[in-house]
Length: 364
Image (cartoon, rainbow, N blue to C red):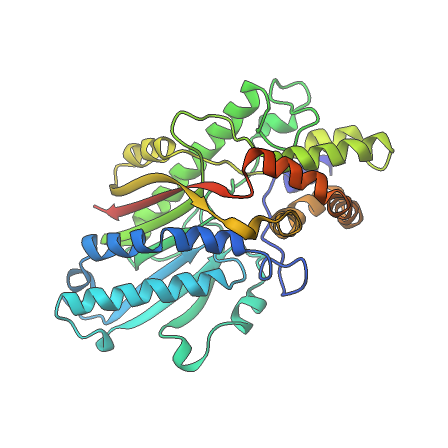
């Protein structure tokens, strides 16, 4: 029973579903800003490197398959897919092809527990959608599609989620036992290494699966929150803010210290160099673009908005561990202290910028 509980705690969970106050649907503007910032770079890369005629029109098929890996519940996935397909149509025009003869199939993929009902209930209708839609539940750390069946895979703000926590973080006598912390930000070298090793294993599995599924000449587009090359730690004030609130709850005997020590957010924020190394080791993809950039997010990072976004992203993972009542109280406390949080963000400039890595890979 205890092993099963630990296993469940170590797994990541989907974003908050539905469309209520704490939903990812209502609290994912930050991710929208991120993809908007690289939209032109993505379109330019596809126009330059994707040969639609060779991929589809030279065969007997008229179907062009796009997969959004880690689609969540919208609306960002719809924005991204519509932009992607418009670019593909421009590419057809550039190559003298009739895009009306192509049928676009979009596969929306996420974990089995994702709220696909909300996703498909909000799917654009009629003239607002220029593709056929289907759901593919499952982890992108393994195979999801038949061999050589996907032309473009798109992964927005998703691959930083680990398939599971490193086992070392769940062992009390391990050097990676992460006392009082919920992430590798500010943690010991052993914790940082355990996270980094797990990320490399997961990326190897991700690329191995995509190498089977993507046709020769097809592409993967990845946008992931990250850090500049040479940065190992991730300076995350909001994880530290949550840690301080959990410490208060331990002091008040609302939760046990060991509950906090056992909980760790299963996220890694890579640099471009990290991704490049894993891609080159895999050997199946050509790197056509790999770059880090800071994104100005402006007013979307007001403290209340930031806390709501954090809740939409991490609440289900935290509730699996601490229980719904504890997590609700945690975020209620965060809201009560939002002005203190705002001062923290302001002093660090985190309300203005975020870092992310854009990677474009072409199947050899």
